[in-house]
Length: 76
Image (tube, rainbow, N blue to C red):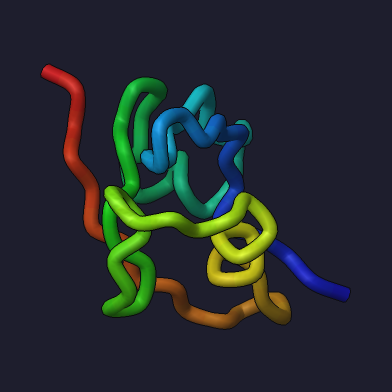
């Protein structure tokens, strides 16, 4: 079984935009909001590079309890 960070997202022009955090999920618990952009996952830049949605999803998923570090560009 694999889990993710708990977001609905859209890849637009090689940038991951958070559409909505999943209610009660890990992202909501740490304060990720709709409109935030995830630019780095586990020290890998994912914004501004040609990376498929599948590659991004692979970086955001793991076995339950796996830690994922993300860096955000937040909407103000």
